[in-house]
Image 1 (cartoon, rainbow, N blue to C red):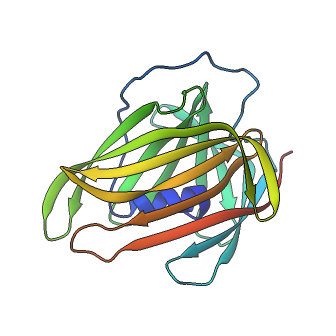
Image 2 (spheres, rainbow, N blue to C red):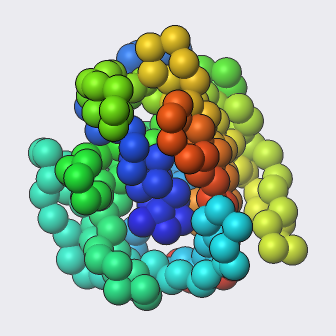
Length: 215
């Protein structure tokens, strides 16, 4: 996609389709938290850079449309670069993204659990084909690295931020991963990805929130 979805699509471009999550310890959910506000008209503008390219500006806007995918109701978000719609959902303390990617297919990702304690994890597994190497299962391991922190992005300080780390593992190999930061009542404010699949070119991307408006 771009941003949190862009970044996520980029991981997806060579591995993943998440379907199963392993359970771990949780803390009681907080009813006032929302790390992905999806009210109609809310929007986020990001600077996105891929590899050594100059940053591009992308704006995502929540439309008044929703759609049902895999039994979940997703809000539809439009993109300023005309690359297609994006889809986000929040169910209790779980946050999902859905997208389609050429030659990979369609998939939804459980990318955040806002009631997890620091160092807790969950795993999404997905079958994929590594060109020239065959079929494998990729495990995307999500770790809550920090909660309730402050994070400054593009000169603005955000409070009550959750830091999620993602490691992409195939068999006994680590392909790299990423770091994602989500602010309460704002959404994703920053992400970075670095991937080095065997036999293929390395890939990096980063994105930072420039401005936002929650309706």
